[in-house]
Length: 277
Image (cartoon, rainbow, N blue to C red; front, top):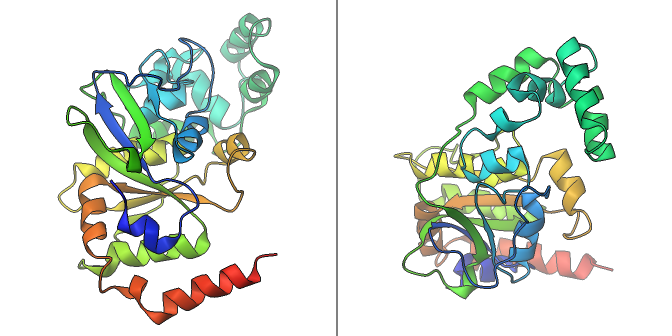
């Protein structure tokens, strides 16, 4: 389908539909089983016009498996959840079990991974905070084999269950999406920005909202690692804005007659085009 929102915003990249299915689309991009990769690479590919598919064995990394909805993949992290909590925070060099696992990994793991495994990514202050963060994450096991990313304009096969639509938006477009999310609703907190990996913000957090009686949109791509991974594929000023499917349809229906067809929005977009070098 062609999105009224995308047209009104003047998006550079395709909105990306996230679906669940038991059938892998022909010619879909994907990672090889057991090989490392960042889910956000394939989100970028879908935003540029390609379909991509993932299953439990081709989700790229443990966080990607969690983010896409393939259960608690952190139990498969080297050394388990304890080592992952230290990986996310202060590192594994400070305790015997962590050093033992690091020694086992050093001949096969990527240099960058080993540095983070030993010294920690520093995204949370302590392993205890990291473990509580993991306990509160809306981890889910989806009922289908594949998660598929595809440009919304390609259309969605009837046998696929659409969960959400992801927009890649600049600051002005993100502002407009936030206003549109609140345009036809009570309250003023219809958009959230949860802390998590980039794939989790567009995946399990959006899935959780899709199951809610009052779903909210999710701002994402605030994950430092994800931004680093896609910096050569996408413009560096973009964030993700993920709309659960029902809320996306509601927002699509609210474009006509809204601020998106009035002078302030047109003037803002015109001034941006004029200011570009």
